[in-house]
Image (tube, rainbow, N blue to C red; front, side, top):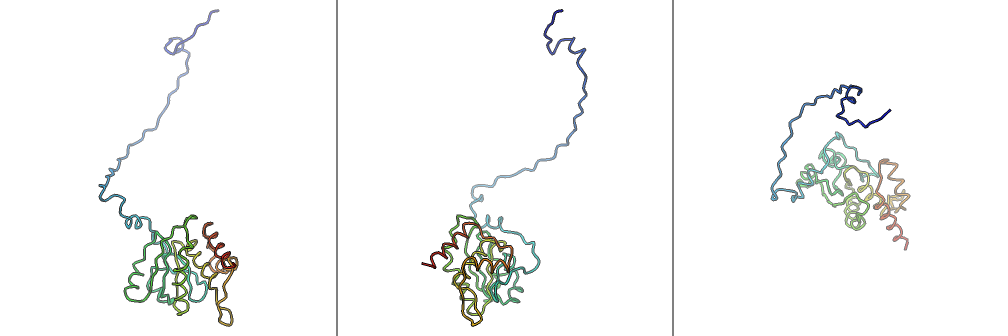
Length: 221
């Protein structure tokens, strides 16, 4: 018996090969949107436009800032966006520590009327951000309001990392008043537990935690 190789064009192979019918789904083509490329004069150089696009959108209907102690509030950027709520909580100072969050229109109106003072510190929520270089001015702004019995709201985007770190730094430097009315500074662990109890969602990034530990270390020298 002789054997031979069959090519795919061989009639013998065609006679014995199984037959399959493949049904392919049809797909209706969708129109493609035309994307225009802006000219160099309007493209990507406007930092304010970039911030506007990255700024968070309103999804919160009520004031959700946490009162850490009487007159000191920790919250999100949305908590600063209601003149009525600022007035109701006697908030006279707003510290915004989020680079991507512009000063809200409500805060701008309140500033124009002399109702509140606003300090803006452009911080990114990155572990390599040197937050400690802003402690001096930011904590002084907060403390000035506290001793004057002016409500102070510290916020970032979500009230979790940057603003929480500022509150922790404040408690470590100034603390809270004891029964005699004297301010008692806290350790990092004490401050963290104190704030966590009042705002469970806080979670400073690792770089900020290390910065706070360094502050504590320097205070002991």
